[in-house]
Amino acid sequence: MDWIYSFFSSFFGGELHDFLTGFDCDGNYISSNNQYNLFGLISVLIALLIVLLYYYGINHSRFNRWWSWLIMLIVSSTIDLFYGYEIAYSQLNRGLIPDCFLYDQEGNQLIFESNCWGLGAANFIVSMLFFIIFSFVFKWWSRNCKHSPCI
Image 1 (tube, rainbow, N blue to C red):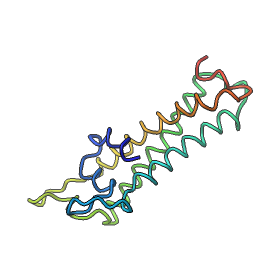
Image 2: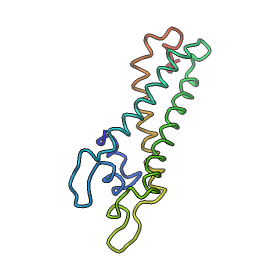
Image 3: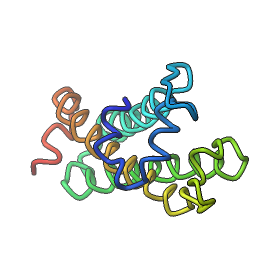
């Protein structure tokens, strides 16, 4: 999943991206430290669950509208936005990010709370993309909402 998030690394910075990818302070890649796999999997599962909820759980003729689908898209993406922010911010606050990623050689801080919001924004976009993909995969078997979002 890290290749998807690498497209959006300018949102949250290279240092945070390198840390989440699994690099250590010496620049060595450690696959067991790659957090994007679990991070991305949970975000994709949230999008999938909300798509399934919309098309098969709610599945009511009143919700067969493009705006109902859009509301579910925004709900799913917003959950993933806060999930992405919380993961990064909690690691920043708990001191789990090594100093080599947090500070440059002059001691200037490199990762701030705004970087955590940037990761949340990237997660928002990734969640939107997967929600749209899942919608076009699963909508065909829905009784009432199979034409949504195209109506």
